[in-house]
Image 1 (cartoon, rainbow, N blue to C red):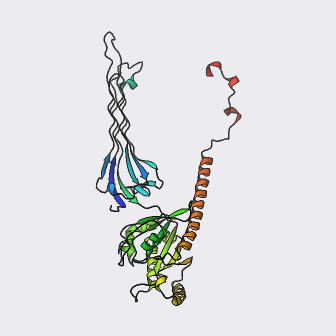
Image 2: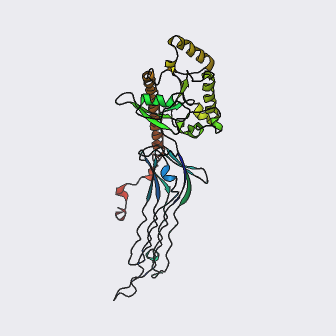
Length: 377
């Protein structure tokens, strides 16, 4: 299945049904009065996050979605049936924007999250609502309201705890295959990864995290070169980046330090917030270097690259060093999750305090039931 992470659609909620103007007509009952019913409401359109979906391909070719219209009201006090709502299932991580204003309408960041994106029109009123002591035969009714309609832009940003960065053939796909059950394509030529791949890494029976592998970056990616710039947005939701560096490039003229600096610069150009995320350095393919030269090669690289943060040495193809790296990542992810939970609980507590009723009552605000008149009880 092709991976589509962007789509543009039009959503049209159902119009409300029209109210009815009619009068009761039965034998031996003259002047039966108004009996026109209300129109039904129009169907609304909802977006719901579904973890079983991982692409927006369902919205690539079907661009217009319309909810059902409400039925008109009828005579004999019959109300019109409401239009059926329409549910649009989207992958978890989909962001919905109004294409005309650019406003973010919804962020489907949790499985099962349901958001109203187009409200159905209200049904019209029948003439039974307009009768009064001075107007016993109203002929007035109202028409149903139009449903909302929007042009929407859908953008999928995959949900992952950890994102992988690196030049093409840095070993990202091999690494994700070594630590998870994901099976991305691996080959000895650049750009074997053409779409994001997600892998679940289980460090213990009750502990796991999700890692995202995107196509390799090249110099100029932020300006449109290569494939990586299209998929950098999928790293926006991660809380940790692993920067993989090929320490034994096939071309002897390739400088690992220069390639590592190019990746960092592309991050800075693309998004300052992404650049500021915690970033760990992972030196890969050390098994291709003689054991006697490994330490010297690593020390020379670190002296030239000047990285601030943890550094790990691995050989992804054999799994050497991957276990220690995953344990460290799990600890970092657990801490980030705990901090996020604490922040959400604090925000919920603040919101509850803001919604508490005002306690600044005076004696005049209280009423004793014994003082009430009998007819008020």
